[in-house]
Figure 1: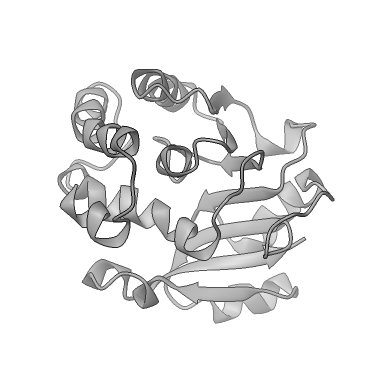
Figure 2: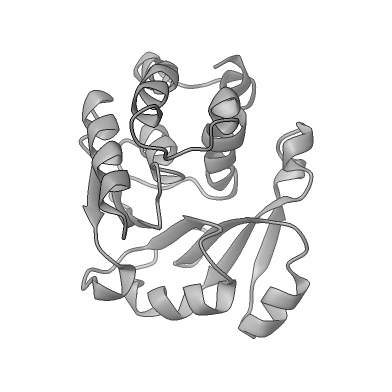
Length: 206
């Protein structure tokens, strides 16, 4: 919790309470449905919550923004972002039903009325969103193919509508394969922990 406050010192009391509750909720649900690796549950705030909030360092979502989280797994990055931006709307999707049930329970326990969690493949969705977020679901090129027609033309942020993708490692080959304009934000510019040395947010305007 102190780790989150170090980088986001202006959280409201409600936001602090929700982030504080995450540890107990994820420990409870992870013991029943494995949504986070056993070793990572010990570093929940660094490797999942703060990592997810790397997107918040790149783009603050304005009230009324609609965001799709594809392959959300246990609710990352969508749940921490929904806590951070309570006036934005988040649609968290995953093809695995048991993971979505965990996300639904956690969102309910945290009182996140701005979260809808659904077992569905992104390609099947008809809705449009200002931004699509995700965390290393697949290579950038196929991912962009899944979601490029889900982006609204209604752009009202500093960044044009598009994808904000959390990924680590050397992405030179993947970005070349994508063949589209991108901007890469190094999370080590925002967070000093060793975990973030190779972690990035890749922005793909669409």
